[in-house]
Image 1 (cartoon, helix red, strand yellow):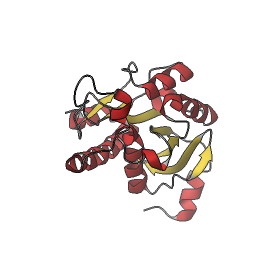
Image 2 (spheres, helix red, strand yellow):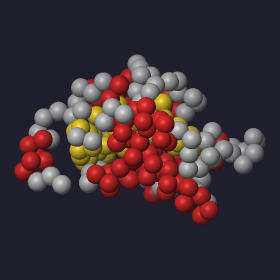
Image 3 (tube, one colour):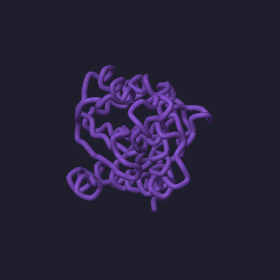
Image 4 (cartoon, helix red, strand yellow):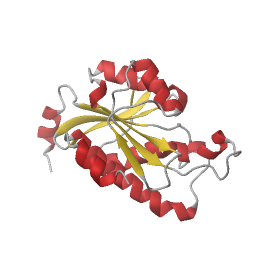
Length: 202
């Protein structure tokens, strides 16, 4: 869509948005429930031609244009519980405020395939979000929660559950969730958060 020369010129300056997908680095964590944020960010990167390969501020990142805005897409490499280190440092480096820091992450209270979009809020018991709020000093960042399903029974170990892989029968629901998360992210970046919520909060 854009010529290479034009793209280089456009991205020579600052960035408008930081979009972080949360997860754990390493082959053993690929396609686990806790890595839903990584997987949704991969969908977004593929759709908009970002290469998430550069390393800065303890995160792998790439850049692209979404809805006419210059965006950094990042995957913190600090492991989930310390996600705030990368988000804080990248946001500070590029002078991006919380209101333009979008976070994609897993939510065990939602069924696989469902999304919940919020403009801001508490950590809801999610350690990655807890780290971001604590280290940035703000909970005023928009977020897209991606349903990964609840524990099989109340006594099931939470860590074991979120680090488990999706079952084959869940793949279709999750693929839809990642595609919808990417579409919702584009709307949020365009300033159409209400539209994203109306379309995808189900």
